[in-house]
Image 1 (cartoon, rainbow, N blue to C red):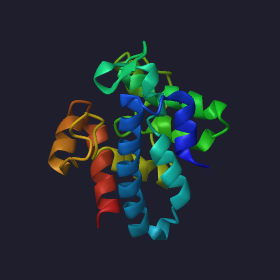
Image 2 (image 1 turned 45 degrees about the horizontal axis):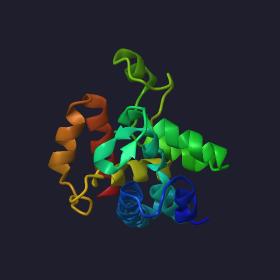
Image 3 (image 1 turned 90 degrees about the horizontal axis):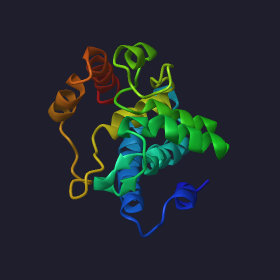
Image 4 (image 1 turned 45 degrees about the vertical axis):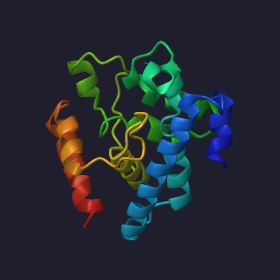
Length: 181
C-alpha cells in the first residue's frame, strides 16, 4: 500500500495541505521507524509504522485550519476521529485507529466528557506499540508552514502538553523512558 496514493484521493497534490501532509508524514515516519528499531524487542511492525505515520493526519482537510490550507467545518481536535472514519472506509481499520488515537498523547472518554470536547465519547488513547511510537514521534513535529522540519525540544513538547493535564505529560514521559533509553 502506498500512502501517497490514498492521500491523493482526498487532497489536491498541488495544495498547501497536501504538501504539509507529505513533509510532516515523512518526518514522523522517519522518527517513528528509528524509534521502532531501538525497541525491536517489542517487535513493532515497521512497514505498518511507515504507512500509518504518513496517513495519521489524513482528516485535517475536514477541519477549519486555514493556516495549513484546510477549510473544513470541524474543530482541529476532531481531525483524529475524522481520519479514522476515512481510513475505516478505505478498509484500513488498523491505520484508522492510529489517526484517532494520536491526538495529544491520546484522549480519554473521561476527558471528552469533563472538558465537553467535540469528540465521540470513547477512549482514544494509543494502545499498540505502533500507535504509541507514532503518537510519540508526532509530538516532535508541527504542521506549521516554515517550521515543518524543525524538531521540537522535549521541554517545548512537555510545556504544550501541560495545558491538557497531567495524564498526557505522564504518558509522554513514560514513552520517553521506553523509547529513548
